[in-house]
Image (cartoon, rainbow, N blue to C red; front, side):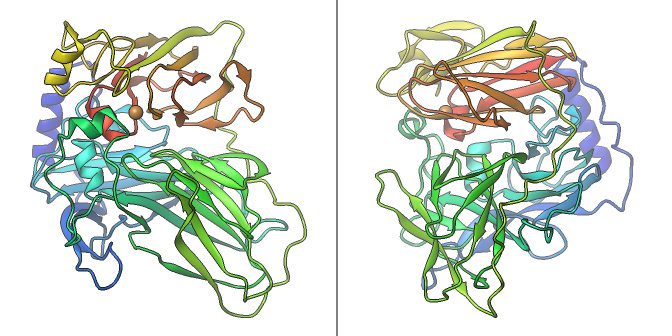
Amino acid sequence: MAQQSRRAFLKSAAAFGGALALPSHSRASNSLPLLRAMPSLAQIAPPGYQETPVWSYATDGAAAVPGPELRLKAGQRVTRRLVNDLPQATAVHWHGIRIENAMDGAAPLTQAPVPPGQTFDYDFVAPDPGTYWYHAHNHSMEQVARGLAGPLIVEDRRPWLGEQGAATRELTLVLDDWLLTRDATIVEDRWHDLHAASHAGRLGNTVSVNGKAYPEYAIRPGERLRLRLINTATARIMRIGLPGLSPRLVALDGHPVVPRSAETVTLGPAQRADVVIDAALDPERPAALLLDPGRGDWVDIASFSYRGDPVTPTASDVMPLPSWGTLPAPDLSNPQQERLLMEGGAMRGMDGAMYQGEQMDFRELASRGMVWAFNGVAHGMDEPMFRAPLGRTVRMQLSNRTAWPHAIHLHGHHFTVLSRNGSKDPHRDVRDTILMGPDEEAEIAFVADNPGRWMVHCHMLAHQKAGMMAWFEVS
Ligand SMILES: [Cu+2]
């Protein structure tokens, strides 16, 4: 099996001119723990509905939605043999990990998709602590929408939980969005829905937390908790509220921030936020995780119920998470200037764009399933959007000239948000995915310190499929 997947990999290396390095860790080992991608059933709709046939990940136990939480310490290796028991080729991307290029799982750029019945060995260091996730990165829109996503938690480098001002406990909450029929099966006939792709993407009708509708979590009165929120939806922007729980933001996309209060937290697809909450002392006070589906009419998506003896509340400010200490600071004195212009979609369209080496008008692009472009190129896989020398700071101007929000993700790097709409960003947050509203402008900067070919795409996965896809090369 391993032999076959290696051959498949070699084939992809040849397809990209043989320029790819072989994975340095594809040693023939029979002892790698497994990550199996397989069809299974999950109770996603509320009790009373039948189970939903999903595609999911399994490690030792049964397959689950979301996939099993993988946990390790910063600097340790993730070693998993992907076994593809799906009816479709797949690959696993480790979102937000500043990973070795050959392990990025970004098919077909960094590896060939793994055919049904075959395997691929992932073995890489996770250098930075934080809240990450893994998900399918081949036919991503369909495969992630079917359930192929799970949390990847890289623990703090120094003890934080239990310290003065820190939380005593943590909870990973994976937020997802499903498009289900009345029978709670996944809507199957809209994988190529160009209407959804040219609007907000494949929006669902059922929001789940850790794979369930309206789950309940026990908390102790007065307890301080760390929530690791992950948005694995393919399209839905999750605006989250935690009323009465004094939420404070401590990390975004895995990277610590100076703790700041956050009445609401907005997560674009693929984004994460670590939030510290203080449970009330009065167990009669209802507490819930709320979602704004768009018009400010907040709905409960999970509840907290008070159980156990009260804990003496922590009066002190929230202790910041230990800093990474691993990310080079951008040198803004002489950066390489790049630009990412987003065009297309419903309401605006575009005059035209290059697609597969040909200039096409909007109508012709749409007939090929393309409705978006980056820098005038739809789904630009032939040539890199730009090349950067190893170690150079790249400063990028992002311009959303469309009528829709987009969640732009850079693989292999985290970037600093310098400005929004011409105003300096006061927080200078470090992220791997930036949510851009219609007509919004942003400036980001990062050190191109990770050699290889890295995807840059919209994480509204129907947008990615319909043109918002490109890559850059660091060498
Ligand atoms: Cu988009």
